[in-house]
Image 1 (spheres, rainbow, N blue to C red):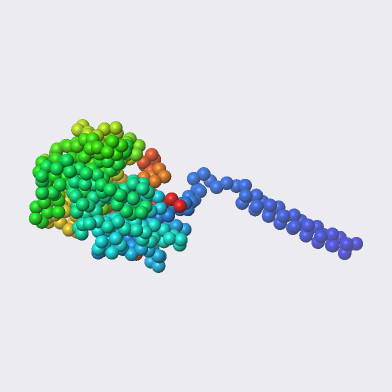
Image 2: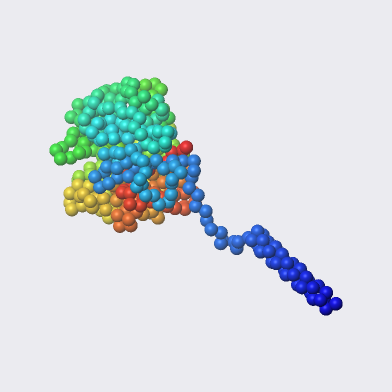
Length: 428
């Protein structure tokens, strides 16, 4: 009897232990599956876009570098070492249309013209064609509108003529003659620095003047700026609109200083004035031609003197009634006066949002820039992307800004990979 009672006691103990273990396991599972985290304690998930390719132009101190395509290997911190790339002698960024890239001059930077690049089967950037300029000078301004419509300026073919080309075949297809606008000046050009298109009309800078020795800018015979408007439907010059108080629309061929606000339909143009003398009465400005019009809006001008002087507007992007540009934190001069050279390229350029109505400038919380990259911001999937290179912060990368919410976040930064000279997003 005692032995039987002992056995029953042992068996009861084992059963109790198993029941306790089972309850404990169920409790553990219940707690793991059913208990939510406290509100606000969830860890944010950083998801990189899988349906796009990041195209990165990097550069060394001599401006040479490469074009890299990152797809599945995107990250927030990017080291380009070991990745395939297309070598460029002048890596100053380019323009994207669909899955095709275009830039000024060939990869060796010895042939003047327009270079076309794309992706091979492995997803790497490769050369795909070249349209040579007859000129051997660094002056091939161009605009790619579609796969079959493009325009470029070639001084040798005529300063007052705009050339047409097919961006797919990279062949010249004709020209538009503006010789009727000649005033007999030593240097005359149309579309040398600005070629824009809106509502099937071309908007081209018209420059009539001369160039002094040691000055890369053309000095206009009349201190004003002019835009020639050409109607592609009627194939006629519709208008030449002029405005005073500033000079020199645009700045360099691969440095675009115009922007079409895709929301409002307004066209904006940047003038840099005389960058050598920087006169206060003819200062750098941002001008506008409103939607549906072909003349300058005489009621509107953003004057650099309002924000900093001497200085120039050297980047421009317009979106939904706001203009995005860099404003320096101190006076700057590209030429002499103790401010030439690297001082113009110090970490003094700050990205700002300027309201076109109130003209109030708001500095964005983005690292300062040193102007080694001339690329304008661009809009993609509801956000605006800004390139910055800052020596002091050790930052070369991109920040994205949501204009609806005001939220700014870092897209990526380069690590031990030189300066960021250009950035495009290609939809896969």
